[in-house]
Length: 313
Image (cartoon, rainbow, N blue to C red; front, side, top):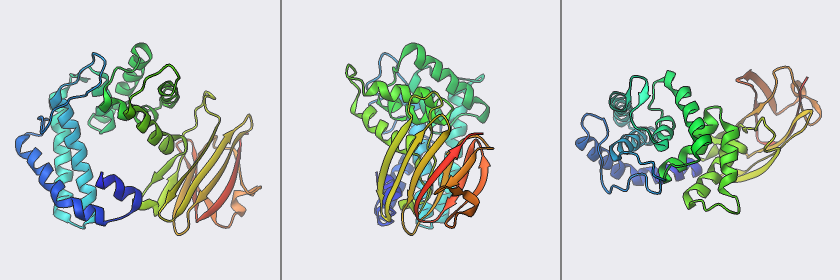
């Protein structure tokens, strides 16, 4: 929680307050899990709320340990504490190595639950070549079985799907959480809201408190969502987007807060006509096109409100 609040607010005092207890906590985990393969620590609730699809507690412990190490490395960076930066980066590498040795055998996860697939992807614990096959297998299972994961898997399933080229399936699943006849958990609804801001709106803080930021909306290709309007009050002011698709392409009004720098990454065809305020982008004063990469026009922008139009050829 202190880490998440620091990322959203930029308040470094939250890290300073939590750092020593966090180091002690993760150090205690390392002592009982000296081979970095996952060992249950503290209260064991497992993946509570699952639908006859359990995940072993030691597997979950390995996933959480890896996350703790990555978080502490970033917190140590804020504290300019080089030994702890290096220590927790090394520990994360060892957890991933221990995870693959114990839970990824002959190119497959030994744990068979949906949550195991979701968390292995969420925490980057798989070999690179196994990422997409595992994601594709998860998407197939969700299509056939529905969501059987408990709260730990449910909390991460939407971003995992969107990250791995299954964004339309994530949209469909998110809609099912809000259906009138559905009874989703509070975890599902809370994490759907977070996913909507991070993916449908595309708000990403690239440094704590949104001092530098990225606006990179994921727009479903199947037309399941054709318009999104969202805003977030950062410590520097309002960050906002209103995008809308049409047969011609995409329109997007984006507000970058004062005293920040933003990268606006709009999806579209490479040869699409891109304008801002009705003028070709090269004539804009406060923003400019950096590059076209991975299906997105990446634009660097100073603070202000921009009206982009992207018309496909």
